[in-house]
Image (tube, rainbow, N blue to C red):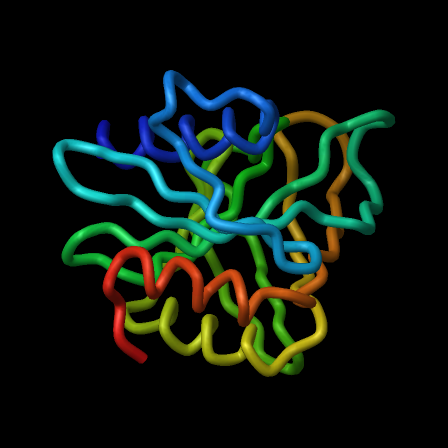
Length: 170
């Protein structure tokens, strides 16, 4: 779990400060519409992820940062879906991720949310490839509930870039 959290902190930092390269370790594979594809080393392995920020935000405290959605490939665990709420989720709350008509419930810990159901990540990725946007409903640690919308334009190309870089076959 520690390695997972460190990886997500690294991802968050890359998003917050895209001009920094961390001594050349993190590398942007490309920007595709709303999505960015990035690779970095972790314990001698490549970690690849595609990510995008919400372009529409409703609720929450005034001036809050938008959520962002990630699809991460790690050795032995490709296509992991996660959501980062940089303001932190309410303790023991759940997040709803909706793509098209499909809704999934994610569990939260701190600033992150992950899928609960085995196999859900793969079906969500499949729907994201066909969808127009992903809508996130969540309760922040402080303030009113939020609804953020993340565009899926460019997701397919960003996914293809991380698939190629990390050797994931579809």
